Amino acid sequence: MKAVTEAVSSIGKELDLTVTAAVVNKPNEDYQLEELKLGKLYPDEVLVKLVASGMCQSDEALRVGDAEVPLPMVLGHEGAGVIEEVGSAVKGFKPGDQVIMAYNYCGTCPSCRTGHPSSCKEWVNLNMSGARADGTYTFFKEDGTPVSNFFFQSSFSTHTITNANNLIKVSDDTDLRLVGPLGCGLLTGFGTVVNGLKPETSSSIAVFGTGAVGIGTLLAGKIEGCSTVIAIDIHDSRLELAKELGATHTINSRTEDLAERIAEITDGKGVDYSVDTTGVTAVMKAAIDVLAIGGVTAPVAVTPNSVELNTFMDLVLGNRKLVGILMGDAVPQLAVPKLIDYHKEGKFPYEKLMKFYKFSEINQAAAESNSGQTIKPVLIIDENYRNDQPLV
Image 1: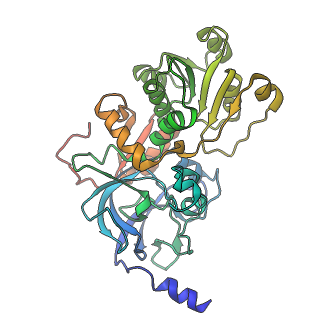
Image 2 (image 1 turned 90 degrees about the vertical axis):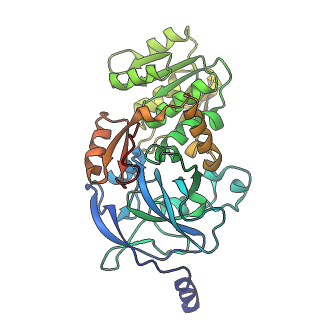
Image 3 (image 1 turned 135 degrees about the vertical axis):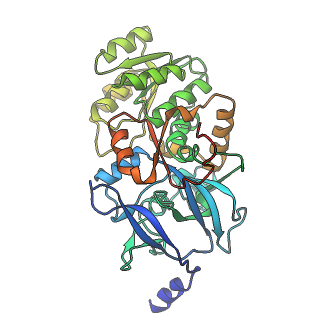
């Protein structure tokens, strides 16, 4: 055991670097900006200076305690920044490269080798355990207390250590303040449709919740040729944006009868596909109930809630399917550049979802996201990055 400990301690390069990070110390507490020390840089890792980070509902779910994670923790998993240093074994990246960060994966298990890294055998351990596979940490408080990382990127920090597998390189002309959310929320929505549901041309899809994941789903439905795209929410302002971005129909489920409106829109058939992004029990059940014969639904929210159903009546009798799709079953290094191209073509206008906040305003950003006021908060962590250029 001593030999193993000594071998682990000898790995990597010491970084003499203090960072400012937003730390969650206890469930349902506000983010606290704290000075942390970065640990060693391993051979397969890089040091990234953060420019910006999206805030995702998954971050909020973990902050409030909807899912159990090892605290204290630095959250954030929609980061974009510039590489400052690369480990000795890293290939294809160099200091100065602009990168977006997504999730980590092992790269060697059957799922990874067949193009499904979000189904990686080690996915939970690599992204949710708070530490490396060998049990070591990347963040430490001044007294030496280890602080967990998230998605092995922890983008709510001025600098972070991440694995090369997390990275997607982007061109130097890419504005990093706009693209962080492509690493999770928008990737999930897009991939759920393109890789998971694979809708037929002229089919119908209902999207429950029009946050970033829902809008990503909606836009992907349009790109894939769905002729009926129904956006469902309880906020009229969000539904107005969904309509602007291509929803053929909108339903405010707080003020309208959902079942009646779906029946009206689909001539009583129901929808071919549905996606729930809310994680609310009644809404997840509704996403099943509105399906046509042979329809498919995908619940994608991080939620502590369950849904009760009768498998025969709700699924079997109508040949319906309920499928789990993590991270859109996407390979980030292939999907994210495609999303950037779609943006340039005007097909994926993700900037319309965003509101920008200073890093110090992180708790305000979280509150305004929770209230529905903001669809996609983006924290500007490096305010000197292209500060002479407008954000949008």
